[in-house]
Image (cartoon, rainbow, N blue to C red):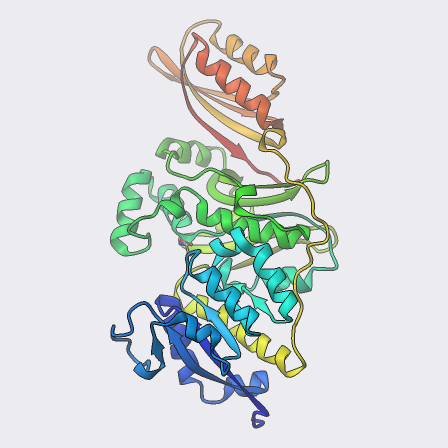
Length: 431
Ligand code: HSE
């Protein structure tokens, strides 16, 4: 093992589940990090909300409640932000950057909202801003997108990037349970947050979708560019119908280029074939599937959350930054030259599955078909199941723009022959 030539002081903002694991691994290191990076990495300061709270294995002299003093400390070279939230994380990171410190952050919400400001500050200061842990936890996905496939043209990225919702949908699929039943169980077992709104409503996945779309299409994308639907309306019946069709419902973060060279970026429950590689991603695992012009299909799979998996990604960034600093400064940043426009959701084309409760009498099917035709939405298949006086009609469409589908659904809901529109789901296939 070669002796380290240099040493860098590392400070942390936050010491929760992820932060305490990063600290534990840094403090337990017996020289491997120095041998791998070329510099000794000293954890010198940790800003926490409550410095009196007991933290096993972390010397109390490292702890402070003064985040400002950490990011202004001239002896600190690299700052790891694992406090989460927008403020004070944004202000502290900007201050650390202006003081010449390189940054590692796992904060997807912050990056998806204020990424442009943070990256431009880092560029101006000539420091690194790395964030591998922000999407897909331990999965190496951002560096491969930024570096390994940067010579290719990405057509589409589809990700299962939220473990909580994937856990719920997997249990619904495999055990036939309702959304509410699985959510309650997931909260009891500690898989889902006490307030699971950001996961269930798709906001966590939307922030990650913005980051993936920006890297894939060399543009700056914010979470407000992402069309977002969550999973709370998915019923046990939707899951059973998908199963009968040889499909599974997944909450997908999708970023793709439209024919007009705009970026469609969206998060919504999606039917995919059980033969698609993403269908095999079970429980709280994450995966990102990329379709690129020359590489073809690529898939990255692993644990998307939790202290140890997320710490793995953060320590990878730390060693990369230390290596860059030894070689004179900043490493590779991502490119944002393309500055592509965002496609309006109304113009985005999908295939849809529409489940209707209708009266079971002559002429109903013809009337329903007529409403699809009137809005230029072409039907691919129709399946009917009788239920006494009424019937369930399950209609799968060909590709149609969202605007035409919305008009169709409205006319179906207003029609006398339709008792109710039970659900509308998108179907994704290979393109
Ligand atoms: N709450 C997220 C999930 C992990 O369930 O995957 C952090 O992004």
